[in-house]
Length: 338
Image (cartoon, rainbow, N blue to C red; front, side, top):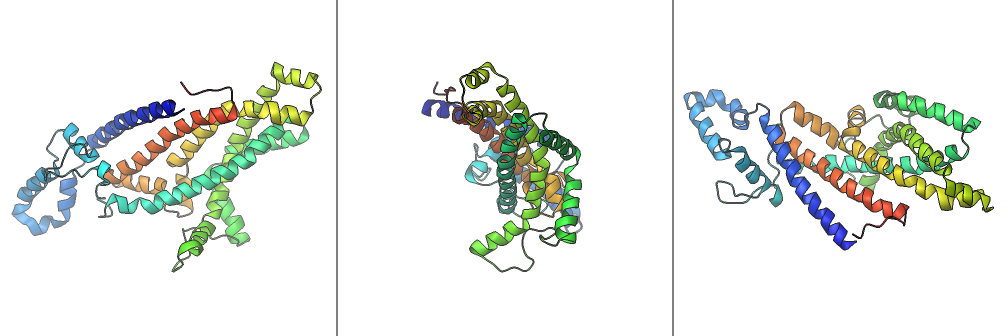
């Protein structure tokens, strides 16, 4: 296991370097001049000195150097012109041209909001869809199964922003249980645990919306995998031996059914984390990474966009690793010690 983990972590580092290099090159292909953007508000004050100051600033920022050199400085492999290493390896993700602040100071709260929103909604969705999918597979073609299938098709067809608006009307206007949006009570001075629960309360309606929109697809996936497993020969043999139906389902079938489902679950989770919650964040006015990422791209704030893209890349890489590790938990026959 240790050898396998070390090998996979090495692969993650290599892939991370390749992906960050490609991202940096792609973003730098977009027509953009950070030096001119920084000096533009002072253009009238500088007057005739504008061009001289502009060229000097470009040289100081290293914008005239080859892209590979700029990438190495940005990553923290090569020193800046001052002789200091000051890249992402040293915790410096650059400064946001839009917010005029260090990127590291901007991404903390949005990342925390997105992680909480996606983590809670994912856990609740799986706690509902796995039992529901198993029930539908065991009682296939029954009235309950047909009703659930119709409901999942409707849920799968509804866009998330429409579900969000409907839930706002139901649970914030018609029955005022939850706030319509925001991240915390306006003017709140709470700290510690009370502040956390206040933020969680404001996140309840977005979580409910994401759970509802995720139920349809995952329920159908679990149902299909479970039905395929129940049609296998070893399940027929277990039933022929006279084993109880609960033993057949929960001791023989469901863990094998979850083996192909685990890949779909992780793919769905990565999709949700890497932008799937963008519509929900915008609808409920929740400052998350998806909303911040769109703002960064719209305003050509590439330092901020790159930092968020690194966050998404790490989620994807470690998500794939967790998927492989989960195989051993679902099916003991799978061995990853080589």
